[in-house]
Length: 417
Image (cartoon, rainbow, N blue to C red; front, top):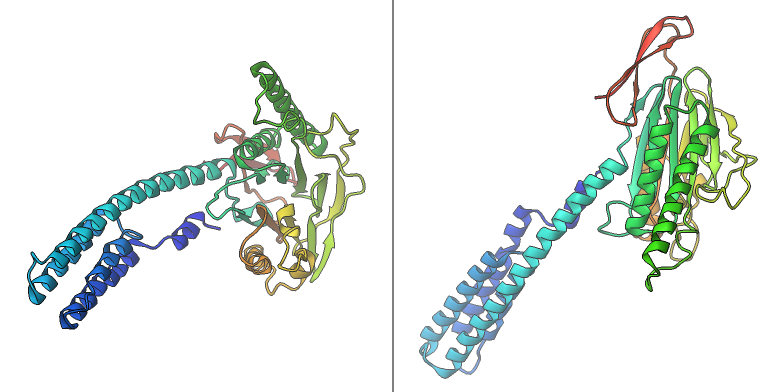
């Protein structure tokens, strides 16, 4: 989902603002003509103050000052046509209109400054999201992917939900997770988890080693934060147990190229859904691990579980912001039912349908951030053929790695630049 298009839909375009400028001008014309044609004891001049005030709500100080000047000239025209400009009544109306125009012009300037600051913040937030939460490619090896992030706050661009994909020499690895908490601290924790995943996805040969690496990174960061807080002394605004209780639920998936299976290691995350021939199955693991950051408090066995994943199957990963979304009557969103009833099951079509349906379910506003990733396995590539596979180095630099196809022919594995 394009965040820039969402932001544009919330704020009128420059062309739309120019069209709105006709409203206060028309108001000035109507009030002026009405005042000139009204009986001597009827005065409509005070209504002219509404024109610059209205302009200040959607245009900058220059346009507001221009409309105020036009309103003052209109009031002077009315005074000259009915009596004289020096008439006490019209003089007071002119003075009041000048003061009101000056005040609302100043407010328009402050609003314009604030809008520029918000625009800069949105730009920084979008850049941060694209660095932390990189967009997934549409095609990765034998997989087609689509992803979407829905922020609970109207102006938010990023939060504690996370997902990533890493292409390795043997297949594709994915992670989806949800950091406990909100705000900048949750964003920092999400960046930490994603960085550890991207670094270890190419180094660790199995899922337990990958998850153990990410868990060690999260635990070390928490210990560093606790030590720093202890050295800095108590802060009345902080909860002393907050960092101790910080954790991240996550599901890590490995999809090998040469096997029609997927392996899941679930760390306290909602189970993925598998859509096959119109039927939806929850991929519950027999022995889930505790969330990342809690393994030192809860005994953990990092034991991945294998499930069949055939060409044409679709895997749906999601965060709890989806299944815990409630409607006006307090009913949770029935994700599995809505997936089975979706009109299209291609990754992008499915996510577009689920997003619209989810927002309709909650009345247009989510109570928590939500992320969705759809993964479809397509027909496998011919065995023995030389092919290029995209991979991602933790440093982001391109690399070339030799691997072997089943026939023994070498193939190039290299990063997208």
